[in-house]
Length: 468
Image (cartoon, rainbow, N blue to C red; front, side, top):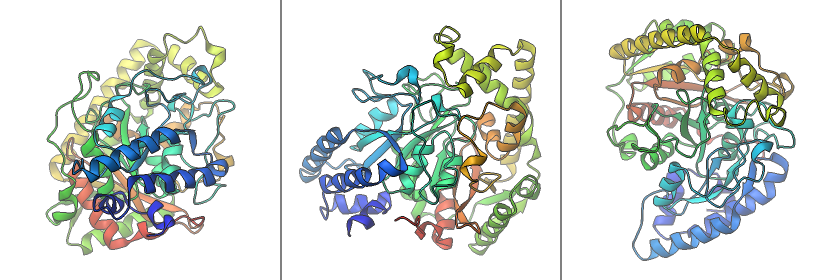
């Protein structure tokens, strides 16, 4: 394989070459670092590149693999993480001038698990300030590899662009209302928001403690399964984590999804959804049915219960997370995040209580839905990637507009159900269109099987961004 093919290859595909000694981790890592050096000045995807550390880890991986101590498919492969995830000895800014030169002394749990799997951590990815949606002054705004003039998604924007540009074989993002799904959809990647509590958030700066999820972005569904298998597990450092049955990525490609029943709510696929995305979602239904998968129409409207309260619960929880910094250092925040904290400070107890009651109604609705079907098919986002100027980075928080934007994503932050999104076609502007599978708590394997079967049949993953 030439360097371009290696960089744009799937994680599992390249890991087999490393395992078999056809290419070394050192060669792969050097290829990726050279690609970052060439592309990052233009696309602004990395806040920090830890090249020396990455090469040190790659050489250690080669030594272990040659001596027969192979740790699994992540061993020796470069990965990158959102810049709100702590990395010992490597600058971690949280996308804010408040922490511009911050260097943590300890790794987040997910970084510890990456290291245990032998992955090569290659750097920190651009993000909005504290993982909301506005970029702090003097922080770079990453560009979409499919079109530099179109939205790259928030707030895990660097994470989505990184995978699309072939600058790592997996990236980590966080999702509080859609920030794994928005950028992975916009950049043509597979995005996994795991079940709430499946992946530890210890060492990840919180935006909203009861809504935050940490998950991977990759180029293939099986690659996300590999990353989840490495990262999952109960952690005493994160009281929200729970014990689930261990995942097994090998089942993704070895077991047929034919016995899975998928639900589809036509209203959720059409009302407030861009027609091109609706078309791609309904085409995906046809592909699934052609594979022998049973698809039934359902009423999933209960998932939208209380969605207008998500943004305000997020604001209240963010205010708690920043209680040691705000309001004393209010002027050091960018305008978007400062506005969020002002909203949070102004909320009343009864209003927050109402939001939580309605949230539990949504949780009950999701539980009832997944008693009748194994997974739900719906659009990953309501809109195609929009021109950048239509979503300005310093837009002040608009509470009224957010429920519409979060219609396809926010319900599953409320309920904690896992979601997996992937490309299901391309718009008239040749930009990715994405669908989303949602499932029962702890049953990510069902979503991986569906996604793998769909992407293998549809083949959209083979299309690469035009600069590649």
